[in-house]
Image 1: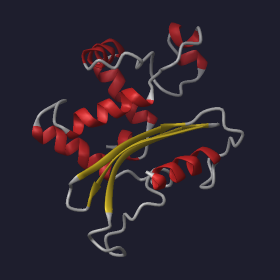
Image 2: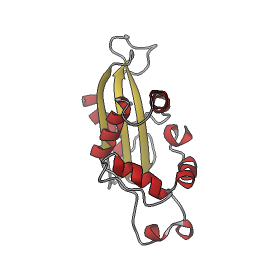
Image 3: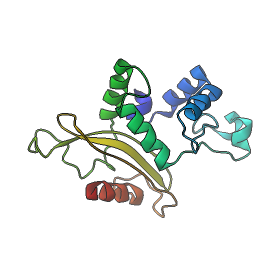
Image 4: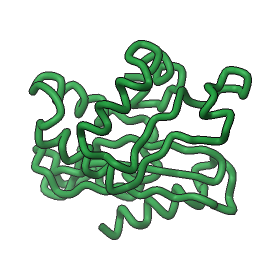
Amino acid sequence: TLMMIVSDNTATNMLIDHVGVRAVNRRIQSLGLAKTRLVGKLQLPEDEQNREQRKGERNTTCANAMLALLVKLQQGQLMSEDMTQLALDMLHKQQFTEALARYLPTDAELVDASQGVRVASKSGCLRGVWHDAGLVSTLTGEPLYGLVIMTKDSRDRSFSFEQEGMLTIARLSKAM
């Protein structure tokens, strides 16, 4: 849960320790996510990185792969119905909603139920980089759209709520 809703790298790294890099990559390959690869654990100091990371290799993915993964999740193609619902529930509890959900009518108490939406999302950021991937549905659960936006090379290297990449994602999501 912490890995998903607050992007907790410790939780992510514990999961990687538990299942292993090879197992994660086998699953990624089995899902056809050709441009996605886990090299190793996240945000480690150089002396704790594996050989590939010390050579400059990085974990990679792309927007198309993340959207495909979200669609497969929403359609129940990744795991059992109970586990799918658990994963979607986690994504609905995302704490970082300042990008993809920022300008969307998500507060059910403040918007007309026919206009409101729910967002199930996962964001991530590094200095100069902001990503957000999500599924947007009606308040009753009817799927509307999926959206993945990944930014890089931002001049704004802050983590502020007005960060350039975050605002770009918010504007694109609102336009969608």
